[in-house]
Every structure is written in structure tokens, then in C-alpha cells.
Length: 527
Image (tube, rainbow, N blue to C red; front, side, top):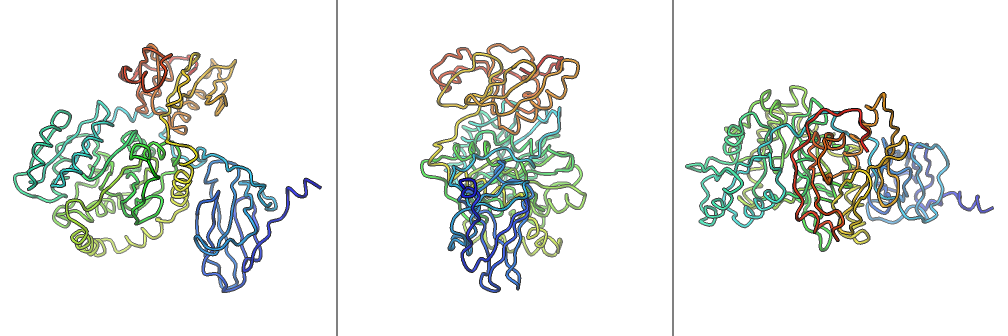
């Protein structure tokens, strides 16, 4: 009897008539012409909208589990935020073709790594790729100061920064950039050349390095550059990777083309770390990048050329045109959803002029690339993008329960610190198994075979990416497998003087950032 109660059929509410699930595809039936759209809410957050046909039927296929968990709670609604079309949530079990059951009201599963994660191929040395951050500047000193302070706070020691003043007229810019000369190379245009020509100057000054174009009204957070670089090198045919933002048009999350406020009391650093930990690595694709924070691979620049400063002198279309030229050569552009960068937008021009420049740029794009807008429409609501936006909604919805997101650190072997102001994950050996442990729970495990250690190395390589490890803690460097793999991925190796310190804040204050380990790995176990 109790088993039957637990498997009770969901009760649809009119005009929804039926709801069926085959483990991958959801099928819905409603009274014909009664609903313009049905919104699908997963785990209490909007996921997608489906439109019934003339017979009142609709379907939606889940390519992979959006949460990374085995199940999710579904509630159909009469449009987004509309009336519920069922008496309560029903449980979808991904990959299991069984009758839908009314949810027992259990707590929703935490977000987990996605089955469709796109990882850097094993052994690829992405950290060795030189990167130059190019920041064109024109007035708006308060935002420029915020931008450069954030870049400096989250700068890889090996990364160069080039700041180019495009003949600013605000007197506050010169002393601000003089202070920035302590960590960046500062250049100045003799006359105002416009954003595109200034960006091209930065690309040329970067030499053979990859380039990140960063707007001076953007504010980066932890792991931003590592995340962009990994996304850009997740496959050989990727030309660019663009961050997501609170206010960057098609790259805004979780709501497109809107200004998305952060949860109360959250800073840019909190939002950036939350995306890093939980947004996932599915990397949706678009036919363009966005120059507010866009990573350009040097091999793509070599193939495509620089930005077209004649057609787009003030910007607003130059990166779209470049992206289309790259696509013509079979190259792709990805959205690095785990990289969040805050964006003020229109700081140099203001809304009215930005709108005018946008219209002018779009006219050129339509003439050159007639299929551009249809390509955007086709990819903007891809399944991967729906998952990304939904996961950010979940992150924000969970913010009140979880508190601020914490730095995720890795400790190898015994003696892992127990700090409350950081997540310390432990890689340990347990007999013939290597285990990744957090909060007393084995998160992942692999078998260790001395005569064939590569599978365990590959497992660790994947874990470092899937579980968003930010730094490796060591007492003394020894070029272990874990240290070498972290070095290839650009995960910093920090020597901790006192693992028994009362907090991560205290221990990291005196930590030494060691150079990457580059010795070829031996047959040692990763743990």
C-alpha cells in the first residue's frame, strides 16, 4: 500500500490533460488552443517553454540531466510564472523509462558536474599558452579604476596586461593609469582612434600571444582567465571564448538581454566563484563572441585577421564580424558559462549613442552576413544554453541557504586542513583506489594499476576540471602527478607553511605561489 502511495500518479490540472515521460522526452497534452505556451519548471526554477501544436500536444527532449543529478522535480505552468498545471511537482528520472510519480517533497539534489561537460583534452598544456589582456580606455575613470583593480587582484603572474588610453578627455584618467603602470604596460593614442583601432593596436602589441579583449567597464573575478583559456582550448576548432555577465546582451545570465541583479550581499567575487563552482562546463555555442570579455586564440587571429576598424570604428559589430569570418573558416565560438564578469555597459558612450552605434553596426552585419541573425536565433536557445541559464537561476535561488560560495582547494594525502572559510577537498589513496573526498563523502574514485597508471591520471585530470579545483595546497613541492597535472591546467600550487592554521584566510595570507611543476610524471599514484 505504501509503495503505491509513493508511486502515485501525478494529477494534471485543466487545461493540461496528460503528462508522459520515457526517460529522455517529456510529452504533454492539453485542451487544444487553451494554452499559448507551457513553462517547464525544474527544482523550483524556470527551465524552458514549449508551445503546444493545434491539437494541444507538446514535447521536450532532455539531452542530458540539467542538474547533473539522476532526477529533478518538474512542475508545468501556464506560461512562465503562471498557474501550476499539476497538483504538485512530479519526479523526472533521467535515463529511466517509467511512469511519472508525484514528488514526495524530498530536498532537491545539489548541482553536480554535467555529463555533457567539455573538458580540456588530457595532457594539453593550456597554462603554457601566453596571454595578454588588452584594456582599451576612454574616460569613465571610476569604472576604469574598478576594472583595473579587479584585473590586478585576479592576475596570473605570467599574464601581461596592456592598457591603451584612447585620448581620454577626463583629467582623472592620466593619474589613474600612472598608478596602473606598476602592473600593466600603459600606452596612449595621440588622437581618439575609436575602440576597434585601439583594440587592434593591443592585438599587435601582444606579439604572438593569445589576447583577451576586456572592456574598461567590466569587473573580473576569481578564476576568470583560467576559465576562458580552458574553454578556448577545449577543442582545436574553437576560435574564441566569451564570459557571461549580469549585463551583456546575449551573454547575460540568467535572463538574456536584461540587467540581472546579484543576490543580496553578493559581490562580483561571490557571483564569479558561484558560476565557477556550479554553472557547468557544457559551453554553449553562438555564432559570435562579445568583446566585453572575449578570449581570442592567436591561431584564429592568424587565420582570420584583426578587427575591421574601417567598418566598425567605434565598435558595436566588430567582434560579430570577426566571429563570422572565423566561422567561414570552420571555427567556433563558445560561451564560458563558468566565467562571470560584471559589466556596466555603455560607460563611454551612454545609452542613446550606444543604441545608434548598435543600429549602424547591425546594418553592416546584415549586408555582409545575411544569415547572421537566423544563426543567432537558432543557437541562442540551444539546450546547452537553457541548462546554463537554469543552473544560474538555481545558484541564485540557493544563495540564501548556502551562504556565500567558498574557495575550493585540493589537499593530497593525509592531514587535510579543516577550515570553515574554504572547501578543502582531499585526494587520498585507499588500497588500490584513489578517492576524491569532500566533507567525509567520496565524490569520485578510480582504480590504481601500477603497470598502467594512465587511466588514473586521466581520471584525476577530469576531476580537477569537473569539480572546479582552484588551487593545490602543498607542504613541500615534489613534482607529483597531481602537481604536474595542476600545472598543465593552470591551477596554482600554493606552499602552506602551517596547515594547522585556524582558517584558510590566515594560511593563504603567507602562502607561497610556486611555479608550475613541469617534470614528466612517473608511475607514481596521483594520491
